[in-house]
Image 1 (cartoon, one colour):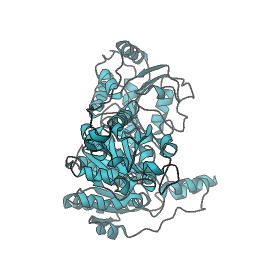
Image 2: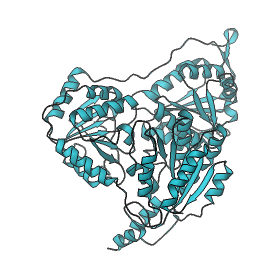
Image 3: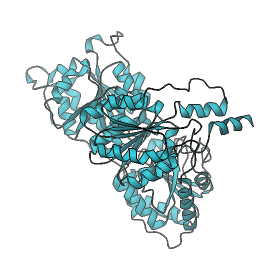
Image 4: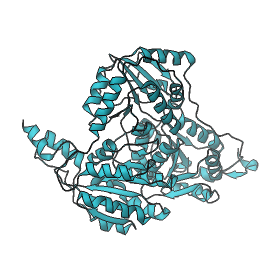
Length: 557
């Protein structure tokens, strides 16, 4: 409502809605299109405004916040290039199922659809990678649309929402009307569904439980472990969801990620029952959609997911439950286990295979990353948070580290480079007393490494382990496999990473041997500042299981 009843500026009303929904931190790159919101945030000191150096980083920080808290990460960017720069982080939230709300300052209402300076069709551009895109032209609808944004980001399969804000609209005055905080509604399995689930599980001979998707919680991870122990049920995790169960559990059998343990893949193929809880079994976790028959798996395939639209979308289940992962996990923890569990021997065998799979492996060069990971595993506290972007370097923390609790792994299931540094900063802001380690490759680091300036600005100390092999390693690996010895576009000339890190105020060291790593790590940890440890890798060590030479030899065979 406008006119004489106006009581509050629209930008202030928007900030009030953020407060109502429990927002305590927003990530942004400032822009003139939403200056009124930045001004209103001055009067909301309980909301920390984190100024980033790139909108993609801001969105990645928002994604990490959403993963860690279960509440939507909130991001503000300006119109046009601000929004398009943010798209990398938005796509991560879309594929990973992370609640995220991106507010975009937009052009004035009176000049829309003229290809105005930095104008974009946000629905057309971002509709495919968001759950909902809306435009607020009437300031009186701010409480309605912000509430809908939070509800949509959290409902069913969580994901990103984009809300555009006309610059002139933010200056309007409207009557502030009461509104309510919206908390997510997640369905709980019915007693009959629980009984049928227990019946099918008890009747199985070779069951496998696979965990994945968004909408999890620390309690859900504990409940799943309780179920696994009660039933001695073999539990695998889908791609980059390793922290959904304590990896030291006797029932944990590994991760269905890139380059998964062959024994694990065979166990899923040979299972007579596959229970997929929360996940989608996408391309990576299904081993290129070959792990199960398409579209109807041969196994008794049980799919439990909070979003009915995801059930049967790719694989057709024999039994399905539409329910939240946290709610189902609580039910599983209370299911009475049968006296006869014929799969117990298989569980022990697969757990032993997993432990062998994560044992250190020898690679070319003076730095043995398998030994480094083993040493780190002993030195890190159980609640340490590890982050990474994308590249072959990520195999080291993804395969060889044992994640102990929910929220200790931040990694993009979308395979986006540059995620590790922003995610580490967001994690350290959220949990300042926890150890936060970012693994990055040299190509990966230079996507978002400038956010070390953000870490310095806000006084957070993250440790970056930068594996430098002077190339885009993953692409080089595929290049050598498909076009051996025809190197194109994958070699890199890097800056002096030690000098670069120091210029950002970080403690910086270069490591060229295995023996140098742990002393360097301890110095970094004791410094109390952000730190970068550059680990110089041999280019032959293209991955833990392959060398450049072996790839060339295989291609010639």
